[in-house]
Image (cartoon, rainbow over all chains, first blue to last red; front, side, top):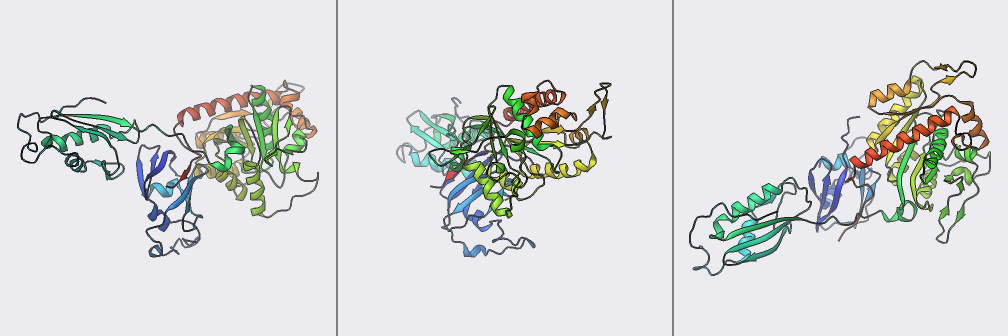
Length: 98
Length: 383
């Protein structure tokens, strides 16, 4: 299993639609929360077997914002969005490749 | 930190003062917009890094407030500022102070605050296969850590086959005023197990999601109080329950339990991969049933040919935390609900577990020291 041992050193809201994550690699990554919603990796948004997108990114308004963001174990974050969607598990590996 | 003078100290009249009036803050800020934070891909003005801008006849002074004092781009940003302001300065000295935000208090997942808020380390005790001695190891390590002076709890996560109650005989749990479970204590170790809620000998018949709920309850609705170590006795396998724990609890690390045979190793490797995927650091390997000491000749008999612990340790670069002998006192003590480490501390099995606990604690300190900056239990409310 060749997964990098990514850890988060800091995570915070940068501005109204940007989440920044500081990784243990020293890299700081700025993530657009609207893009995160559009790329939600949960089984309702992404077909589990074919990995083809089910969610149409155009159906997501630019006004979508997180309500809260939580750690999931020590390998992922969960985001509760203001459109009611909260099932995505954004793994560190997934986030770092965005 | 410091005082920087523009490299372009050519003596010339200020191009701005005179024809265009005094140098404006906005002029400076516009110029600084050309300076990007290479990590955040935005300019430092938009990011709000510029603080306390002051302009006088002879001086331009401001602070650049970065996100971290250890920012590797600090020098580069400072030099970029100097170079974009050089032409505007008109002989004024440019004084840039690099500062950094103080890290705010790290937010803690509110759901876990009441239950695990004062638990310092949460350790998963896992193997792939059942019957290798996970529960015996968890119990004895708990009492060994306790004997070494630590406050310890055991969470028995084996919903379908809880063994911890047999090995420790806890009383029924009570509730506190907030309707949280109070884990019963046996000889100073706090214990929660499905076995405390079922009739002895009765099977727990639950589908996966319900079993997951029980585990979540054990993690969120038990008043664990102040603990140095909470050991979680994992059920065998790499399925639902294991994932639920790893997603809910902020695990500090895991230790792997294996017997010497390849048969046990096959599944332990899978569990190792699971923890790697979940980014839970592995502290090391405990090899159980390592050898048998003959009571007639005191010779160590290695009943299982291969040393599985050694193999696993080499394959994954994990230290061996302990080799536990086949010791009848461990078995009898477990069956009688009198953990060997507590009741027969001088038995060979007990001594091996005490040594193992010390090793585990020291590996954990090394890890904690190395990984001090990592955040594992954050909660952000979006504004």
